[in-house]
Length: 279
Image 1 (cartoon, rainbow, N blue to C red):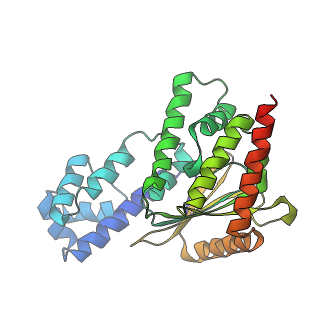
Image 2 (tube, helix red, strand yellow):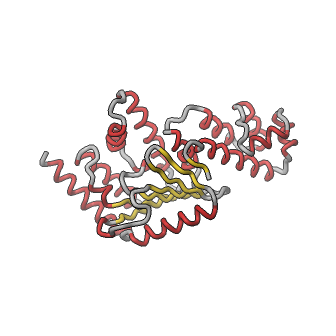
């Protein structure tokens, strides 16, 4: 399990696991790959254990040796470059871009993958009231870059449960909120995402107030990510991820069916539009 303070390390561990998997699939030993990329076999082992981080030129040679079409160079560059995300979220953001399936639970704000720029700007400004305009826009840009994941028509598969509170809170004002809900509704109506709303009438629910993300991958174990105040936990222990999955299933059971959820979204958007027209 990788916790806050070691989230970037978790991403390097994913890098190492993928390196080992692809090396073995190519029928190479650590010594054999090391010879091809001009480092020792021991160094390859340390890369795979995330003890050492390869330089860009070594990552490029690994791609050539394993014929991985630039995968290791791209991932290495992303991990070496200064992250545009909070330290505790950086590794989760990296894994999010590699996932084939993502399940989100959002009890307080719209998930980052679904946010519009005006909504994101309002959320970021609320947490950074003394930041410059350039700093705010950089953070908004990073969030919009994440949201481009959903431009792919096929993957990742994205299932999201939002609490009704998220739809009622006028983040950025009623006009911004109406636009935000319209975006979510459009994605759901086009069947790009599967959305459910957990109604306020449901009362108490698992993970009260805590967001949750579950991610699955083609050739790596599933992970779960939870977040608290300026901290996050990236979980990869199979037994723990299984328990988290069961909790998500409980949330699904308490949420409205997809069509009823869409009706509630559209109703909430109209309420915000009415408020906007009177201000």
